[in-house]
Length: 106
Image (tube, rainbow, N blue to C red; front, side):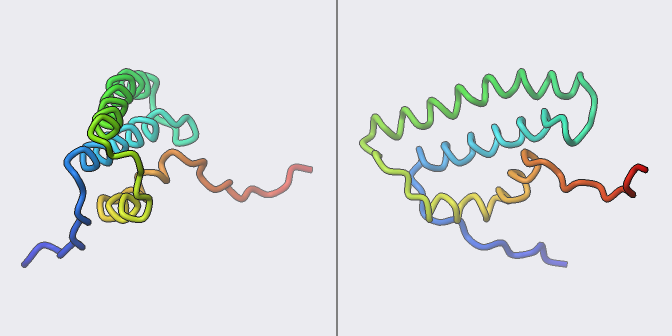
């Protein structure tokens, strides 16, 4: 059986690719920390520790883009890359989950 075929990534500069990768890594860590999704404190602590280094890598990727004269973030292209890399699901872990329907308390 062949693996599913994914849409191709849009053409990105190396710095844009690094920016997208670092952004998604930060999203993943924030999603792991999100208290609305439960979990344990140790996992959240580890994610918070990783978040600090992820944020520094994200900063460095943006600094490199700026130094190379890449002064604009091309939102449509970057959003396409994020979608191909499952960014919508990963960003959803950062959001609040929908409320649980419970019967009213009398």
